Length: 265
Image 1 (cartoon, helix red, strand yellow):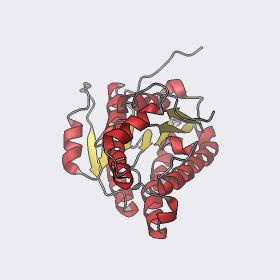
Image 2 (image 1 turned 90 degrees about the horizontal axis):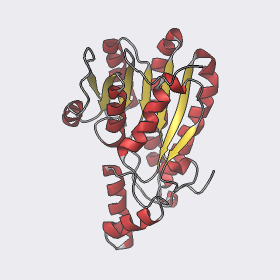
Image 3 (image 1 turned 135 degrees about the horizontal axis):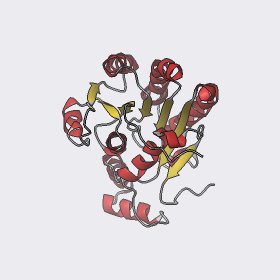
């Protein structure tokens, strides 16, 4: 029987959307396990501030990469440079801020294409970039931070619901194709998590309903069996576990981290 091995020392990770929220919390969790982390996002100032939050591990030096995730070419180019500096990536965390809220009947085709580029196309490009090295080394972890809308669409998030479902289907397909290479592909589905993104969605919904954001927040909390919002660190714990050797026989799965809110099995 193997030990419960969560050591990521000498491993390298590219963490997308890592300047704040769940992405930053995931980077902190991976770094605390000894992983060398590259923080990847569009705002260099926030990335610099985020770098200061990573735990100090002797012999481990972290890095940053900067790109606008609405420009897949830029994302791929910057990721390739970061991979060269890191000597390859053992871990890829796909995480990008979601599209604006709104009903699906109000959405435009251009808005769908923009969201698909930011999420699905970037995920595919980054996976193609890192997979050859993962296969060669016999170790790889790709974790996608998506949404519980994969299991149950969330009203008022028409574009996001659609794109997130596409990412989940992409991940499940990829998992089957690379499983024999000892590369695992899994997805974490955050529920209502206390982030800047969630606050902006509450404010936008309040504006549409003619009420205040505090009331919208209270209604959201009331829908959660645990009676509170999640913390980014709680989602990050699931992300980090998927990346460890202990999770070596888990692939093609989705895990809701939502306080019990999702009404499906």
